Length: 453
Image (cartoon, rainbow, N blue to C red):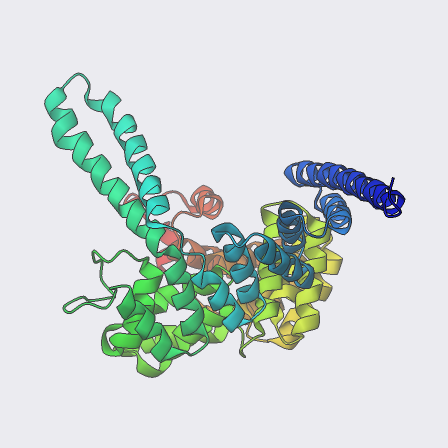
């Protein structure tokens, strides 16, 4: 045995030990990853997060664990942790899925350039989109066959063309989904020329297309509307309902931008007036921070889709900490307490929402509802009165005022309010039934006679 042999054996033994230790850590990491995934599937998100933190601590270079950690952290509004985990996952395994996750997270945090850089690598292959379209087309064909079997001619003339058209539409939509996302980011950031350049490169800009009308473009109605705003501002009044819908979906920054564009450039006085009303009463009074918007959406999802009110409350409070002037998370906390029948706490948070933004219509209405539930009738009437000053045509508010007035003995006023509610919304069954019982049903099946006085 040569003089170097013992050292070689020792180093070899140490290598084996190190390898075994690594394998042990890997087994533990995989076990923690499995436990984290199981906890996520069961909705135990905090528990999942701890398991996945353990997995990544044991195996920092284990890409699946980093990706799973990012997902768990994102669900709970732990955005910095999620972003860091997604960055590591992309570095370890730069797949379409990991790049997409990183891009989405960067966008939610307002890091535009990182978002676009990551999403640029997340388009996916032509083959992937084609297979997706083929699968959807086949499912469409399978669903069509039982309706027309055994008519072979119907299968050939109806099912086959329908399935082809469906598959083609889904293929095109899948292929354009990530570019559309990047386009939206650019529009929201005010990067007009870059947005138009992207649209041209994708073939969305075509002669003779009216972007506010249905077209054969492979993009969503939202993308078409934004193209109208950029390219056909004199024919873009479809943006008014689009802006309201975008804001209602939680993207208040983009919704506000679209609505303010119509306030300034609306083609008709009616469109400008409607955009101004929605801008004043249904979106924030200022441009809020992107991170606050995203945390508010996270809170809403935790509360309404995942049924985790405690985690939702935490996310809403994080949104407030980022942008104390954003009234929506205050309002959502108030609504959360209302859902738990804690109307005293609800009043506290709804009042805070209105201190931040006195024109927050929904907060004003819900302030009335919470006071109404607590039988604080004068407070409720005052809140409802302010809500009606903002939106005189709201049937529910008129109805609620009517019931309170009846409760406190102001019968004539209460009946008038109920009649106003039914005129505005004939589908209010409780109010209509009450009025029919009092005055008899009108022979024309319309509002009761009292309502036409």
